Length: 302
Image 1 (cartoon, rainbow, N blue to C red):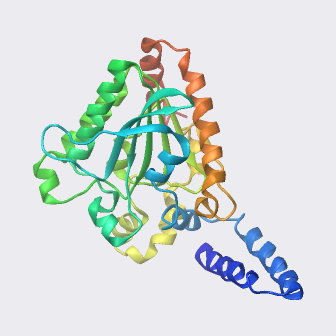
Image 2 (image 1 turned 60 degrees about the vertical axis):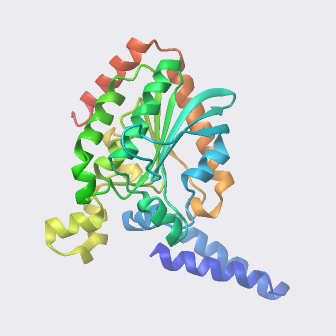
């Protein structure tokens, strides 16, 4: 599995720091062989990479792609939800609205943002800044990386289902360009609530599905241990979704995963988002809404 290959790569990198010339030559051969293995990934390998703890998070993505970011907090109804980051920024000098799921690096950071699982307040905060973006004519760029919306009782009591449904309804009729980028995990309605867009882009090793592979295996086979098998059955990779017409573009990652070179990844993301916005910038508001409607109505048609 890719997990073992990545561990071996880390070992080779560490060994190179102290190797002499002869040892370095042997390590370079080993390095090349390991990198070649990284070019042939199974769906379960890609799920592992999508969940890699060093994969770029929304804060790093914002710093890498945007300038003048100004965070906006609170849903103006209940409270702040740290699991969704929202704000205004500039993208190549152009004002945009940025929204993304937020995960942490440490256990403390993950607890603070509920492991990237938003409650209804997070989606209502996102709705608030989307309406503001529409008012001022700013494109909306969303970044999706979540195991799913928080399923706890208190979230349901405060209207989790309604908040997700309202997000979908609002995004379907926004009169500004909307670009969504799936950067890691994209599970269930928690991901879809930020994904109804004019252009859906996806990192090469991200995944997008109705639920997690573990949940799929638990429901279908009553055995979550069959998660690797589920990854192949679910057709959740970027390549699968591109073939189905669900996404509009795949953003290449460094060999071995996005965690290996954040800067290289951000260059690819920057180019892809620029192209998406350029393609949408000449359309009127009515044309954007009509095209978005036809895009989603057409998904699944033979």
